[in-house]
Amino acid sequence: MYELTILAEFEAAHQLPDYPGKCSRLHGHNWKVEVTVAGHELNHLGMVMDFKDLKAEVGKVIDKLDHYYLNDLPAFKAMNPTAENIAKYIYDSLAKQSIFQQTIKIRCVQVWESPRSAVKYYPQN
Ligand SMILES: Nc1nc2c(c(=O)[nH]1)N=C([C@H](O)[C@H](O)COP(=O)(O)OP(=O)(O)OP(=O)(O)O)CN2
Ligand SMILES: [Zn+2]
Image (cartoon, rainbow, N blue to C red; front, side, top):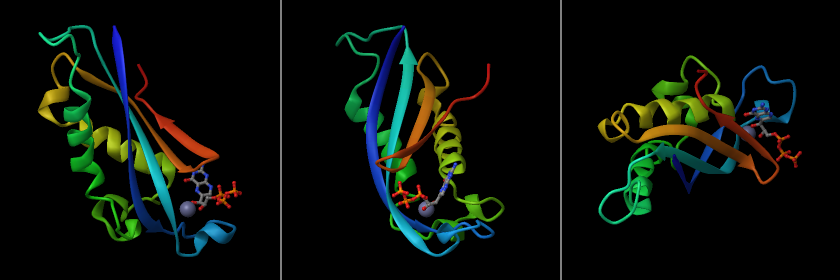
């Protein structure tokens, strides 16, 4: 089995209503997103998939978050845009793409909210 990881970034604002502290106020982060996919087959180039293609797939999802006020997006109307919920949103969005429904699977999504704080999401087996 091979695991490939790429790193993407987006900038966005959010706030966490009811949070008992400064994060209840409007603020922004430079979010870093690590996406890991797994596959056991190599193509004729010796790759599970081209990093370039993986970055493009992740980019389609990240573009829907970049430079937005996350609380306003439909995905976060009913839940806080925490790192946990953002990681699951990115995972679920990627897992729906046809390329990840055959031999290559999304393994996990890790979202770094700051250089010292990250959440990793992967579904339970
Ligand atoms: N489990 C989670 N905890 C917190 C989240 C989260 O998404 N998941 N988010 C926040 C806030 O968004 C806040 O902006 C981040 O808080 P914090 O890490 O305290 O931010 P700082 O920039 O002040 O980081 P320092 O390491 O303290 O400098 C809070 N918690
Ligand atoms: Zn925050």
